[in-house]
Length: 184
Image 1 (cartoon, rainbow, N blue to C red):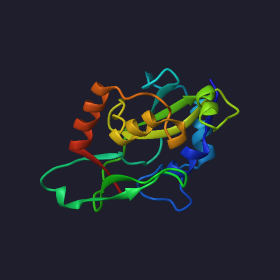
Image 2: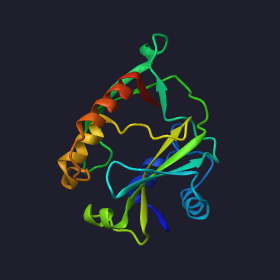
Image 3: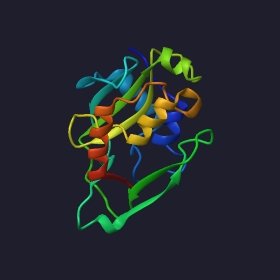
Image 4: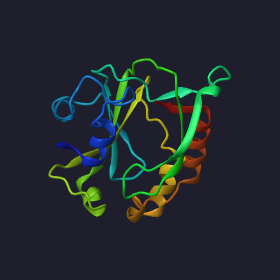
């Protein structure tokens, strides 16, 4: 299996100005090389046939992606409208400020097939393309955010994949994201 880091994932996982909540201690090239040279611990089925998740033990100091919302930290939650790229419409997001989660035990790499990336107008020269990465304490997938599910259902012209919403998966996502938040 050959893997390429997509431009979309590169800007999110390795921004020009590094942030504490992105991948640490490794360049985009080293990340891609590691994924191609190291077999994953587990391969999980994604939300559609064109999506796979490769679970790797974290080889960096990257911290967990989410933090549980508690009475002690709820006052640190912030929200605002943001777009993931210049082409997408801004959506409401929330995050913590002033918290520092533990180092993640696992990196769960989200892969799309070359055929799907071609359909979305993002061709690659490998079999699979990295579209994201979850930094977790367990070797499991974090539920996709509800807004991402909605964007996917809107189709590729709105930055999604064209996969309809699975109502049960959406409810599980809401339950998770109601009790957890990203951090900055």
